[in-house]
Image (cartoon, rainbow, N blue to C red; front, side, top):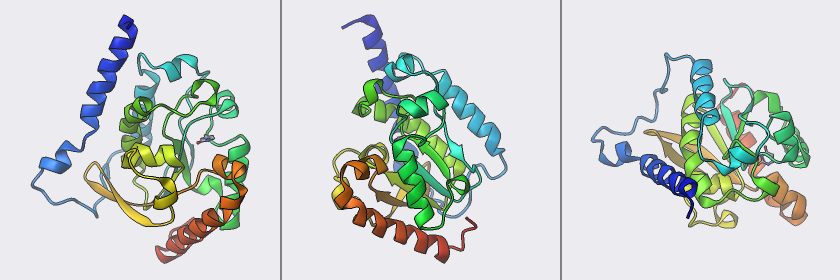
Length: 234
Ligand code: URA
């Protein structure tokens, strides 16, 4: 094992420990499901500081091999936040999530429920393109899940959409299967706050498995129903 690998593992181990919801487990206070965290803080500043942290990440094979960071796209004040897997080649070149083939399909899916991508907030589990478009490894998913959790807390959406098994693994662990979990509303607790979440298939998967689009359509209709029920302005 090289010294560099050892350092990377140490960092990942520490970050894994920090990623446990210790506060949630040991705090006697009830979970606050209603008030907004960071209410008085400035979202743009918090987002810039999170981006800076990700830009300064060390000993990361993803960052080492990528052209640039792919942080987010869309409206930071939106009540709908969507999380994908990670940048591909086009995203790496343009510094923007979901601009390749999967992005084109995502835009069509959103249009089908009369939602514009500019009206939601989009990010990924990992913010640098994995080499050769491979799936992020579990250790990378765990490491970046700290940043993703912070990202979600800052945006503070009313509806969180996790697209694909990597996004699901990042926030729900690796023991569950997306084919069983998709399509149901669930609450995910992040930094002591509960977020209404829909897990659904990733557009890149749908491009390979056209016969699964019917499930994705059912999920999209559920999301639209909730947007109407909550009277969200998107
Ligand atoms: N797939 C993703 O998960 N995210 C992107 O940004 C592009 C493709």
